[in-house]
Length: 84
Image (cartoon, rainbow, N blue to C red):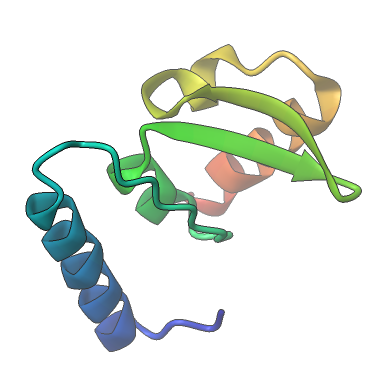
């Protein structure tokens, strides 16, 4: 929560270190964030939560283009508008 740019670098490094240390590939990391670039870069899958429930779960690579539900589409649209 409330990560500043310097702290994000530390978190990115910690996640990378954990992934490299997990030779079996069985480690699961659950990361909750509003930083969509961060999620898109590091996630295998992205879950969209709305009103406390998982509404949609997609592969990270297709989350922004293939979401189906109106709530997810509204969130993605707002995120994409914020990039302008």
